[in-house]
Length: 145
Image (cartoon, rainbow, N blue to C red; front, side, top):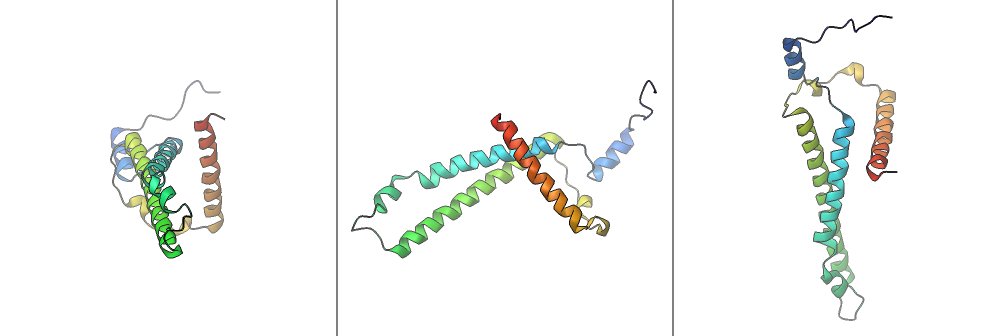
């Protein structure tokens, strides 16, 4: 067994080139934690702003003077769309904050370029399954289960 690592530390030039190419060491767990926190805050904000208002209970309580079904459905769709928009916006904002906090502001288009060698549907499905599994593991870690 060797006593130490045979790899030399990267030079400053290599680190700068890797950063320009978008190859920065970062933790997906860190970003996902911020995404889940943003999702939770979005759900709380959505409930407080769109669903806890007393007019829902008073206006749609089933009284004889209530609005017709079309107005009721239109109001609920409007509130549901606003809620989903609020939740998704908070989740995206949380993810962006996590990425910026971890890596700093890094804008590069090189990782977004098409690479046909990576377009394998089986590997794509495996990546989606792995990210879904990781999401639930992180959620359990945050909850403390």
